[in-house]
Length: 307
Image (tube, rainbow, N blue to C red; front, side, top):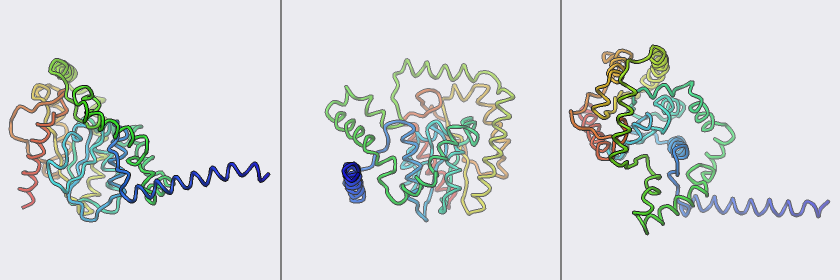
């Protein structure tokens, strides 16, 4: 019997030793965190960093979808943090912020049709459920090595990508770009994607969609009210997109609908940015230069209103 258990015992001891070693390397800063190699990983890492690196003096947080994720918070302030998640909506970020003890002083909330991916959206429910699953939440809290940013496979692949792109930036350019939300799309494909957006939005909003947005907006209102009662300044924003898309019937109706659902006499809205030729990759996601300019606009406006 003892002989049978011996290999198992040795394997367990080796496993414990390796985990302890990796844990020490993580705490010692030898193992550097990853930002993720795909959308779901990046979302998880972003959310876990917010949860486990909580600061009591957090200045500003942005919540939203991939539209807002294009805006690097560094464009606005070194103290800004982004909880804008790919394939999600502002609802997800609001749920996370509500659960955490420390609230930001200022919260920027993206309002767009992406809120349809809200509280009842299956991917959103699973994402929140995985973040706060009690056993794994405790493990990640006590042992950072279990967080997504320290997963060995992710770190190895990302390190490989970085090493290779340094040697051959042209050949492996697509690998480097996979490490961020920004994708440089050639002009022909870009125009095609923009036209698809224009075609999809040239008709009025369907009644079912309007009702769904209205319902989800009520849920967002309850979250905003709770956060405002906790002392958070909540500012709503409508991130600019391609002018040709903005001029479509559906886009105009969406903007009007959100202004009716969130009236300016009750909710604080950012003013419209200066008229300019906002460039996007696909009609709705700003390219880096435009995202940076909008970030600068946000910084200027927020500094004005803070005075």
